[in-house]
Structure formats: structure tokens, C-alpha cells
Length: 204
Image 1 (cartoon, rainbow, N blue to C red):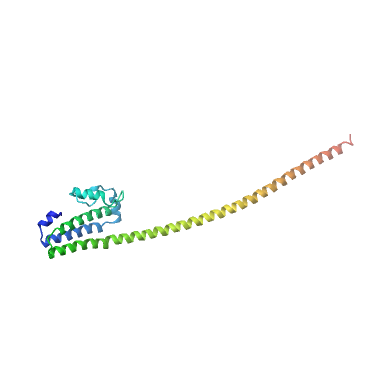
Image 2 (cartoon, helix red, strand yellow):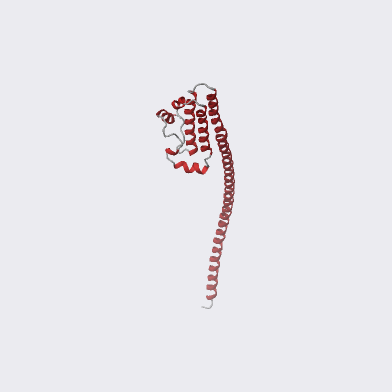
């Protein structure tokens, strides 16, 4: 509803329609589930809850004011549309004569935004803070696990280095023993050949 149409009809019933329309918008936003928001990410701009008959001034305002994420949730898009409508309706109410009925409607209009922030925005902020706390706790747990694994890896590496050094020393000792044993075997073989040659000489 724009300011011109609001100025024509000054009846309390017409003014009360502002609050009713706003509460209908609020119930539409409040009723969104997380699954519906995720499913709505691929929706086109025609389903973002904005008024198709938006004026060029509003379009320019939407393009120059607060920027939403590249892929905003349907909640964010409906929120932007609701705030635009709420602002337009506030201007329309402000243009009405200053009567008691219109003052009541203006207060109801303000209360609609207050109620929406209290019952919709604040719970979502609290949920985000709780999620952030859980993510932080999970991150700390992962970091602790990483540090524990790193410590275990360093311990295993240290043990491997000790075992490798011990094996290398044992291998060197075994190699020296093998070499000496081979030399002894050659010496025994030479002694055997010499004894055999000596035992065969007298008979000749």
C-alpha cells in the first residue's frame, strides 16, 4: 500500500489493515524452516518476497543500500522485502492526519517490527551464537587431537631413529664378525691344504 492510497482512506479499519498485513508478512517469515531456506537458495528473484510493483526509487535504494551475500537465504530475502514494505507503510501512515486512530495504527506498526525482531531475529542470533560456540569447541577439540597425533608421531619417529641407530650398529658389528669369520675359514682352509700336502710328501 502506498502513501497516496493511504491518504484517501483515513478510516481506523483501513489503518488497522497495515498492522494485519505486516503480521501476515511476519508469519510468512517466521514459518520458514532451515530446509525451506536451503531449498530456496536456487529460487529466482521473483520468489524473494518483494513487491513486483516496487517503484524505481525503491529499486535504486535496494541496489545502493546494505548488500546481501551472493546467495542469500530466503529468510534474508524476505527480511529485506519486509523491511522495504514496512518503511513504505510507515511513510504512508506518517502522511495520514494526526488522529487518535492513526496514532494507534502507527504504534501498532512500530510494535510489528519490535515483535518481529524479538521473536524472529533474536532467536536466530542466539542460534548463530550457539552454533559459533559449538564450532569453536569442535575446532579446539580438533586442534587438541592434532597436537596429540603430532606428539605421538614425534614419539614414534624418535623410537624409530633409536631402533635404526641400534640396528645400524648391530649390522656393522655383525658385518665385522662375518668378515673375521670368513678370514678364519680361509685360514683353516689354507692350513688344511698345507697339512694335506705335508702328509702326502713322505710317501712319494
